[in-house]
Amino acid sequence: MQYTYNPADFPRPDIDSILRIDTSLTNRYTRHDLLMANATGVLPLLRELNQLDKRVLTTDVRLEQVIKRQQIQQRLSLASTELSSVAAELDCEGERADQLATYLDQKDTQRIRRLTIFSVVVGAITTVATALIEADNATKIVGISGGLVSATAGGLAAFSSNKTVYFAHKRNLLADLWYQPKQSSVYPPLVWYVLNEKSFSNSGQTSISDNIRQRWKGYVLTGIASSQQELYFGSGGNYQADDLHTRANMLNQLQSSVRSINQDLQGLMLSLAN
Image 1 (tube, rainbow, N blue to C red):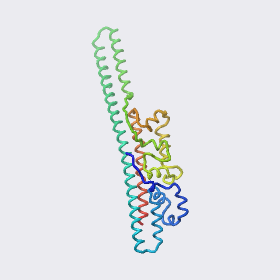
Image 2: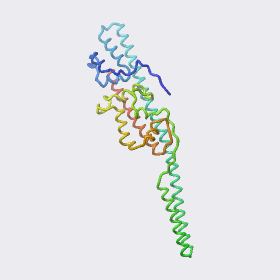
Image 3: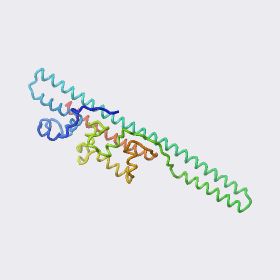
């Protein structure tokens, strides 16, 4: 489902210039809180509330303060809902991939079990046959043939099958993290801003989205072909079990990063409460 967001609530790209002009905000809130306020779209409301706090506290001013605080709380509640919905969608997509991977794993397990049983049965029959056949040449032929069949079946059991299943994901939650567009067509402005603002990462040198992408390139998708990139980051394709497990793991990594934004949101709400 495609959502429409109010442009007035979009994060401002020029927050530093705003804070240089309005230093009263930096005196009351940490830079991290102000970045989160910008992400949630409440920074203009904070500025307006800050200006009201400087005025003489008449009844009208107090009423305006209450209204501004309610507007801020409503916007923060909506931000919390956005985070929960994105995390839930990532969790759902990860479960879809895992369920299909489990289906293919079970098919492969059944195949291996059948080949193993067949190999054991052929071995047993060969042993009995060689014991009953008296002719030396015939015994050798039966023994060699049975051994080859048994070994072939056992060898096939040692390898995973190439069985695939078609998996569609037109709304691909991995694609924007990989291709890094300026604006996301999938994630809300709040989430996309936090994922791409360097100040929200632990190092402060690279963004969360860039860190995730580098982990994928270095540990998950090492040496994959361009066709396989299209599989993960396109609209769908034929997946093997390992590919589905990989996709589920990438979605789970993203889900963890999105859920962690709640800590930043909680920090901002505590600062506002104080």
